[in-house]
Length: 237
Ligand SMILES: Nc1ncnc2c1ncn2[C@@H]1O[C@H](COP(=O)(O)OP(=O)(O)OP(=O)(O)O)[C@@H](O)[C@H]1O
Image (cartoon, rainbow, N blue to C red; front, side, top):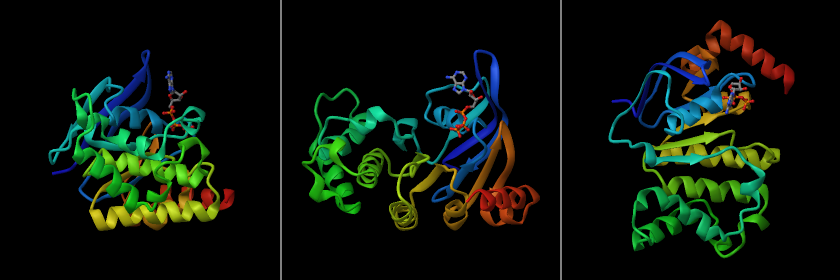
């Protein structure tokens, strides 16, 4: 069964529909990239997948035991996050907040998970450093470790490489790809980077209020809409 199944969803702000009649699904260990022009509804869809904005119509069905608070989310970077006055360890550990429920403290398992994910992402030496003093690439690794603390099944990443230099960007993509392939964690990523999207994605959702295309990355490359968009991407690169 799919981890996420969206059935004919529409999403609106104060009666203004911005996502219309959208259907797609995310299977176990899929790597889905959501692409589309500015304002096409990508971040709005992310909000709905996280349960922060209910669709006006249609259904979002979670399967395979996935719960909404077990989606590991890496948000679009904001200046507030960049200046977060906490240690790397505290930021990573805060990924366990959702699963903590009403317990007022972190358990030994929470702390173990935080250390495990810091190790996985090679940031254990930064543990005591202040988050705001890190480089852009280090910050994204910390936020990825935080997101991994929240999930066993699905990572949701909203334009995770914005502002990173090309080498750090490639390292970050490779890291996400490794996590997807080795741990079988499904990845849903909003991306403007069409080249890397095509290098790693198993599936593509091309959004323009509704799904202009949803299917395998291979079929997208062969499709008319895919070819037109990819040519545009090369043109802008
Ligand atoms: N809080 C809001 N209230 C009203 N309208 C909104 C709100 N947030 C987004 N919108 C509108 O919804 C539409 C889709 O916006 P959204 O941010 O989801 O697009 P996007 O594809 O993520 O864009 P970008 O690539 O620029 O981040 C836009 O027309 C936007 O103006």
